[in-house]
Length: 228
Image 1 (cartoon, rainbow, N blue to C red):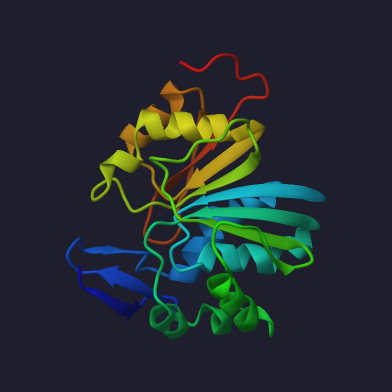
Image 2: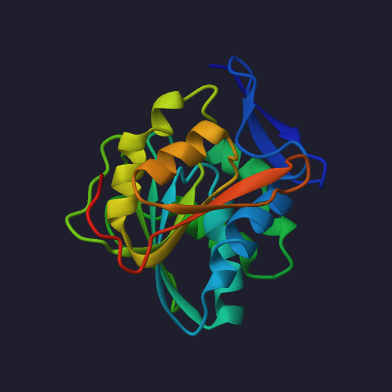
């Protein structure tokens, strides 16, 4: 499928998949979407602790990079796991240049480290951030015990990958979250919300990033009971 790098409205870039008419990030702003959906609605709900994060769709590495940059201000030590079956190639992530788009002198070095680190094993990027990249997707992902506090659900949209937005997938996400954990996603589709609620999540609609009226945040109850 043809891939090309394009500019978004906030000046940052993204990858466009022309055959699907789909982008890795919002055309209204890649960086501002990542901050709005995953940092403001997700990461900033936690502070002063060790935090275990799962990202569904490592993609360009933007969410991981921003999390690395923002975690110290919240006094968070982050164990970050990311699922990805089609890693972007080096020429693409270098052209995207997200390290230069963030307001810190170390971001470019960290962005390179996130992409160059080995797969399938924990890699320490900074003293407060460890990354494990796994070459798998949500359809094959399982955990024996709840191990995550926060899930960034950033798969391609249900229009092009409907099998990643099903009850079966959200059962897996529900099982992976510790009680009280949350999942955030840019999607606000009614079918997605209903699938989440069917497996036990408590959902809330939040204001979406520029270009989207709403987004979803789902919480696992402190006493979740038995899965449907």
